[in-house]
Length: 174
Image 1 (tube, rainbow, N blue to C red):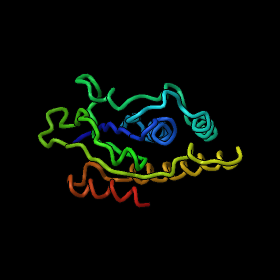
Image 2 (spheres, rainbow, N blue to C red):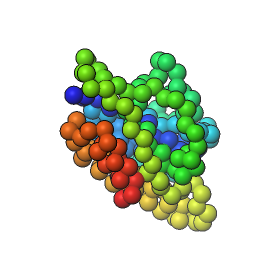
Image 3 (cartoon, rainbow, N blue to C red):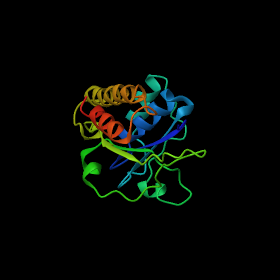
Image 4 (tube, rainbow, N blue to C red):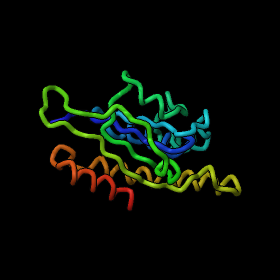
């Protein structure tokens, strides 16, 4: 039975959606989860609107930064149990080989990495007034927050790999 899971959220720019997902899961997941985020073509900075949205709901933004998914391909990088794309572009790209989570502490049942796509509209793509842009970031946050709550409600140690894969994929449809 596994007691800790690493989750990597991916998008293209790693400036908003994946950053918010990382922060939300790290805020809500407790010691059972560590969330990370990365991008296929990172922008190099986190959108201030994403930071403002997280701070508005009292989620820590300490340490959040835009980074390449290549940081998670090194031998000393954390092993990933779940990789979730949150933008359609990243979902279509060929992902690098990440360190894959497996058995820990002598557990004979290795857990292979679960991949899923939870598409979320891109708030930085919204053109409009500052209020409309703020609403787009709030909407993206709300979708991610709801999906992460669903993810946290899964009985991870009770589901076989096939059922777990299906359950995590279905979250992206909600």
